[in-house]
Image 1 (cartoon, rainbow, N blue to C red):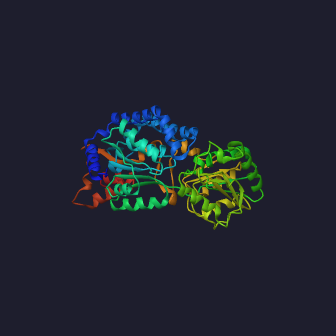
Image 2 (cartoon, rainbow, N blue to C red):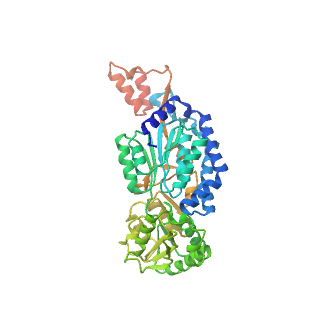
Image 3 (cartoon, rainbow, N blue to C red):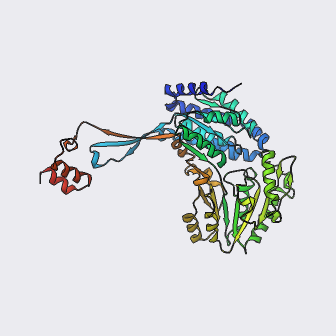
Length: 476
């Protein structure tokens, strides 16, 4: 059936105009409905994720279901506080007065989600849109068709369909949606499509949040607990959708004299986690489709890096599996170092001293995440002060995403805008400035006819010159 975009938009505008989505009660009811979906349909969700990505049940629960529930539960607990106007200090210029900042919904918003975490990256922004009081259209990724179909079915069953809608489809449907006038667009995906979204938004001056990606580095210093570091790097790379995550470590930097020791420990821990034949492991997600499998194998087959593989490299085209693969001393002009990998390949660059890693990172576009493993306080401070990135973690990987008190978003090529926790509420709200005055305290000096005495008074007032103000008032 053809998509009636105009009819859908008309219904959504009418729903928003009715004002029902602005009420606390409506927002709470929709959040509780989302929790019911997670609680009552976890097996269906897990199966859809297994179908789309062969995602292990543990990863489906931890990174998708539990994370989505956590966002809902936080919003349910904090929503009344988030909705309250914030008091703002006022100055002598407007005395007597009071000020407040009122969070109001933007209106009709569009969420375009990604395929790699197709539940979480769909519903987490929807939670933000609902908590802020908007009506919302969700466009799930067609590359994860089982999860897309399940989201469409469940949201229609549990949510207020006059205010929350799901549109399935591919490029044609997305294009049709982008032609409409929205009050905000939230997009998660790659920078190529991000540019298309931003171009479409410009036509209507629509604000956007772009959650993109980039080459997120992980820097490993000496004199650390290497086994713990290796396990945490593996968890963030291969234990997180087999590298198909925007915050996964994309490449590693370490010193020349430490590289072989680091590789040995990574090899050992990878074998502990995934066995001697990782292609048979049920704990590794598969590559999402044949196009991405071919893209990744082309990166591996590049003549500049094909001889640099020091671990892994096995592939199974039939089952779309690639083993965790480490490449050492790859050239910086190789294909693998000039696009986001988004897969189970980890190239290692070596430097003479660990401080040189900052220049290597800063020579590239700003990443979505950066990771540093060190016990050196000075190096920590230099890294935090000099590496521009969406988010930064010291001595672990990806865990910043789980903290609702921290904003999650990119910078430069890795995106614009941020969300998670209250930052999601803010992302879908307009902060309206409100100044409240009474009819008392009217200042005649504001009004014509302008006189030297009025000018003297206003100069003293606006310059904060208390003595001058007193002199002006008594006519000196």
